[in-house]
Image (cartoon, rainbow, N blue to C red; front, side, top):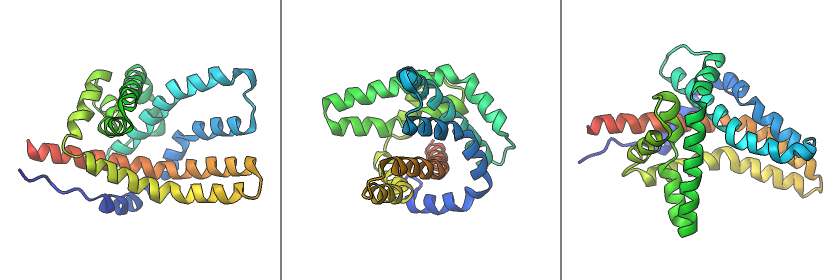
Length: 223
């Protein structure tokens, strides 16, 4: 059986070609993550830091991820959508998003306990769990099953695609942070890293949504 070919490099070119019009709205959606990172870097959370981190990692991240995925998906499909509508959809799906998030973490952790390689394998197979949750209104369990089925036979493609976007978007940031850290100004390096990571996040989001769309199209063609 012949699978429709998906090119990681073509997806990267498409990402740069399509991100422009939706870049600012995606930054707005993700702005809370920058505020949190700044507060952490400046040490402004105090004794509430632990509780704040738990809320952020297990509630805010699923909410922001869901909103960014939904906004990008609808925009790339040429369907009108606002930032408010994206947040509304993510909020309505928040409990399933949190459920999928926790189950993915546990499954990846179980794979890592077995060995590092199984943990990596599981993480890439479950990468698109949020997508089914927020786009198709699937339950947490169905979303995980959907991602597992969608990436069947495509693990290597997902791995190298993810590696490519991380390399392009974040390796320059890491090098810049290392350069600033070498001057001894750790606070400046943290702040610069947070800001540049925030600016790069929409690119990664668009790239992964495009990959998700291509995998869905491939699955539909096979069927």
